[in-house]
Length: 315
Image (cartoon, rainbow, N blue to C red; front, side, top):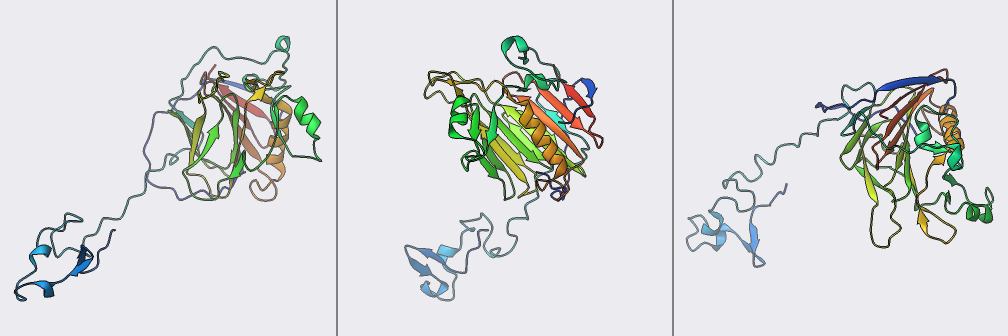
């Protein structure tokens, strides 16, 4: 969900930018303020309580106990106006990634020999495949037995796994152990552990973010969930959801190995057409960001106005 009326830009500071290396193309689109007089023991203390009314009340003589300012400055020189935090997006024209390595290894790829197939390529084979996990609407769009047959890889959308960030950030959403996080928005900053994804607003453009959660251990009370922090986005125009762990035939939790390639193609196509992205006519361009919290594998897949794809990876 994109809204290109970006939040106010503020003075910025630079961070180290880690950028991935290879490029490929394809033809598929994817005050506290105190009043005069204080209360001690429930009784107002005023100058009228002095033994000698002509002398100041000694109780009120010390420096202001509440703010450390000298007496007589109450109501004056209050805390200075807070300076807004510097924007991490200022000056950016393309995505930047901090604390993500330029190169990573041991990345698992979808292979037919393992029962998975990816047709988009360009690095997405580390994240997308068929069969893959997907979000669905409830009955009558899909029958309960069809959901059950997916062994947890097919999960209905509900208030517990999908939300719209309607207020200014930061806002937070879980990245489940063994599962995934997905977000659609026009721009912002996403922090996942030490990693920082800085995604600047661009005219006619939408971001689709996919994050693989930590590999599961199948053990009870060993919490490997993570939290993503979102900030500097356009409130009311960012949709976030997660996919929980799947399960095997005996009901044990297992990793959702990949996300559905077919559903990604539907989501990216919808971004180009409507779904309130860039107004009622869709966004002419989009960038899909895929990030693995285990290997720190990163892929940027971009679609231009003609549907031509370019990609960058760090593996």
